[in-house]
Figure (spheres, rainbow, N blue to C red):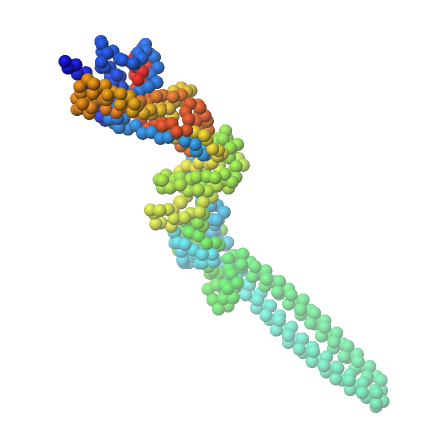
Length: 476
């Protein structure tokens, strides 16, 4: 005589959280025991803890449950900070005129790349014209003094030569006793007087020449301070415009023109900021660390930078400076990471790290090897306690169940008995956590390496287990 078939258990793929919880509660409620009770299941009182949940594979897939193996691994303790890209203040230059003047021409525009020494604009200045005139006068005066020295020195030297010739003649006559001593002594005196006049005049002319050289040097330095180069000075005589105070304003360094506040025929003062040049080949990443975490930060620490503008891109650098002051309002201190501004995949623009971009910085504080580590998302927090869900295989139970179904006269895998398919048990296990680093956490106790732990779908399992706590009384 055939035994009556068991009542079917529901098997619903793609369950939501509440449906999975209900299915869990129903999954052990229709067995062969008399009175619809459970055979081999513990029914605790309402409110009892349910640390075990059993689901079919369809329910596991529908709930999106995924697992990983707990394993040893390096734990990098990190400090996560908000950050912003900042220009490198060591490589920027504000360009202001040295003298007031009128803008006559503009050579460079906003966004242009310039090299050191390139002309950005030309100004015309009365003050510069006066300085240029003083320079040219000083140079002309020096050249005139040099010619005067040469000419007078030549004339004086000829006078000495004449006196020397007369003295030599009188000396021969004296030796031949053909003359008296008086002409000899007069010739000797005249020779000495000629040499004295020559030396005195040459010294005087050289002193005056040195004064003119000083005046020329002063005028030249004045023009160089105002922005003229040695080449500009050499062209002063050939270029009449420079004599009227027109000169080029040059870039003091290489870089990009990131700001320009100048128009043609505009009158500018010495306080006017005409151009801002920045070298964006290297930028600063400025992060803010609160004073409670400041003691963990120091120069040389490894840093990983992620910017909102470039998802998935991680830039590596190190801390180069920790500010010496704390902001009184935010109670935070600035930390600087310097990075090369290299191309970013997917964007062809030059210098992609633009000042003002927001992002985050993770500083690597310490690194150590953990015997057991898990992804942070595997941890279930309940108050001050931490738990994980372990996935346990039940192949033996499944084989025993198939054998029981065969003895009852039913074929394994029949469509009316899908509840007899493979099932998965999940056990909640309390763990003690250690250091955290990035998306991983160290597990000090509660599980061992090799345990299979749920990392996705923990909320579903927690909700299902909660059904037992709320009065379901099922511990599966």
